[in-house]
Length: 474
Image (cartoon, rainbow, N blue to C red; front, side, top):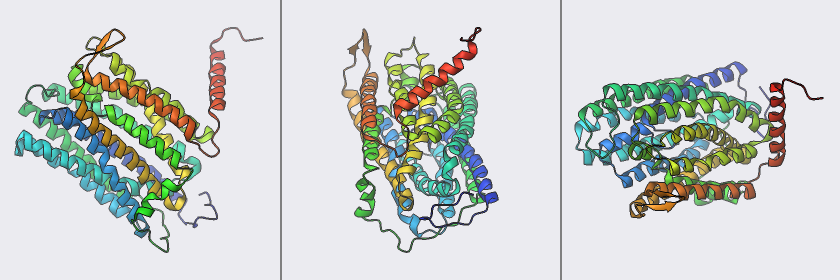
């Protein structure tokens, strides 16, 4: 195991235990991903099954906005995790129990249609949805600290790329199986335009019960995973305004915090409507929305993650984020130009999303770890999540409140954009502005300049193209 810097306490942890912990974390991540596939919880936004369940309970655009907002509003509980961390000799009990309780709650959510009316059930579902996301945010902050101690910095990019690739395999295979079962035997996806059926309710209960099962398995894997010993600081940090505001006084981190704020706001505008547009406006079922699109997205993630990890380790995280944002800026246009006849645009969106978000999520996580002081790492991670989640939640609610007031048809390059497509157009413009802000404001120590990475990428492609030439160059 690499020796820690002299300014850090030297922790004795056997290499065998570290390797076992990293291996178990991969299986734990696969189990957590299985739970996310069944419920949409933990993925940052509701998936097709969760949105269809809300449709079954009678949700409209405003309730969809709350569903998207509450998924990230729970990130405020990351501050609680950061606040109690200095007082914890072991993070494992809270991580295991909060994650377990949050995930087992899905068994109760699945029973809502059989116990309550649709109107009452919808509001109970929104409350439990927030509770589950809050518990996972609490455990997620402590888990991040745990993994940062377990995984040495020199291999962090490659390890998390491989871990994400393993979890993505689950994200590729399981949704396709779930979609097949729900479409073939449980009446498909309710569209919110007509009342859902009891058969569909039984399908939701089956899938949410599977989510609870994977949650239990995830809890057991967490308890088996070894935790490096940690020295408690002499004075525990107090949850005060000065403590919360410390990252904003950090000149290195402050530009990233501002970027995260505006990027979260830009994403929040359309966040309630991506999947709803596919289910309702394009009239696509589970097989596509929760099946083949997810498969394609997952395949692009699996293929690209090793390349993203290598780019982060060799060139820095900033160039990887810029490259990922270039793809992210293009995604709203697939929805702007999509119609029932051009629904296949969604395949391009799925592939590009898998490529882009794999790189962005990996690089932004590593960049926060690079900029944060070691003793305040958990606070910075919580701050990052709260800024992004808070901005996204506020603007999701704003979009839900104004989408019904937009013109029913807005002329655009020979087309008439529906209200949701108008929101997508605004999102496209906002994301492009975020890219410009990131290029001008956010820096990373020791990362290579963007132009150097572009030249290196061009040389890499040029060298590979030489392999296809029949006659070698003189």
